[in-house]
Amino acid sequence: MESTTLTEVPDLELVARVCKGEQALYAELIRRHHSRLRTVLSFYIHSQEELEEFLQASFVQAYIHLESCSLSSGFFPWLKGIALNTLKMELRRLHATRKKAGDYVRYVRLQRLENDPDGAQAEARAAALRGCLEKLPDEDRALLKSKYGDNLPVKTLAQTLHSTEGALKVRLLRIRNLLRACIYKHVALAEDA
Amino acid sequence: MERIDQLVEDYLDGSLSESELRDLADLMRDTPSHRSRFVGQAEVAGLLATLFHAEDADAIVARTMVSLPAKPGVAAVDTTTQEIMATLPRAPQSNVEAPASRWRWKLWTLAAATVVLAVGLAIKFIDFHPGQLAGVATLRASGDVRIVSALTGEQRSARSAEETLQSLDGVELGANGHATISFWDQTTLELTGSGTKLWMSNRQNSTGERELARTANLGKHLVLESGVLTVVAAKQPANAPMVVITPHADAEVVGTKFVLTVTGDSTRLDVTEGIVKLTRASDSTSIEVDAGESGVVDGHTRFKSFKEP
Image (tube, rainbow over all chains, first blue to last red; front, side, top):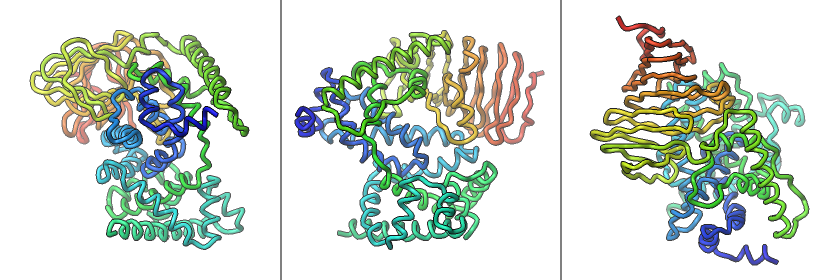
């Protein structure tokens, strides 16, 4: 009964009540926004393990700074700002250590933040991706689900599908290229509209 | 399939070897279009992984709730403690949705037990001090000194009275700026010179050789972007050395006094007491610099400790 009522409480009321000491209500804010925040972070972070770490750290840091939450723009934009600032700090650190190959590769990925400081592209492209997936043949969608949903390495997938690793890599590259082109087209159309 | 595409595919698949990772980085350093291809593929792969991800709201809620301090605005729990907490068993996940009040009761019981266990483990296994919970460090400043929060982007002038610095805070000196940072274990840092910029960065990651080395550590990690930093370090726990990262090198501290000077293309280390392990960022080669000796990383000076004549 209480959980049904809780879902109807606006974000900003929850924030105010958490600030007054009802810490348990913060769980409801996490439930509401973790999925959307995950989408934004996935635009910049490759490793799922690292993404989970950033997701959790963002919610913890947001809680710590909750009293300075700008209520005018809403909770999620403020939360997203905290998460992106954490990534910008990581970018700054990687700028200092990018001579190392692993750091450089992560640095290149995070450099996206310099052109999209408020993470708007991430959400727009995620929305476009959903539509683009619908246009793929069923077998390609099934392959993506095995690869990214079940997180199976190419080697395992190749064995399961009786294919070669090389052929599968080419196929995955081709599908992602198609999706990428479709996403750009959708986003461009949306911007024109 | 071109070499760059093969390497990107293996990187996204998690099957790239160390030497292939270096090849990938070299190819991207040399050619902007390779960087674009990598970023484009990685973005789509990241979004796909999230789209197909089987979400477990209970898990993220449970993990986050046990990491929260008592109330908003309270100094963050030191990342050392968070690292320990992260190693503890996570909340059990039920397939049956329990009534909210019962679920919340279970969560709080778990949280309380976890905190007690974490503190116990911290005291038993590492050189833990309750002072760590009060924030990362304290700052005393004079002249033009700014504190920048990397999280909220807020900037403020440091007061002359003592201030608490959090993990991911930055300290930047302006004209006539001078700052002293003290840690709970009596380690002190002195920042001098206009333009000196230091970040309190305790974050640790699990990717890359250099990062893996850090994951094993629970010590203080700082990033000196530019300027002059004098360190007087208390003896650090054996499993948790303090590391000062510059654009060109890592200085690993055991318990010592030294000065690090970072300019555009070089990092210089002068050790007064003790020994500092200096690791060159470009190839991870390390040297030990003894008391009275110096070391320079600048791309042309021989990487070897030396005494000034």
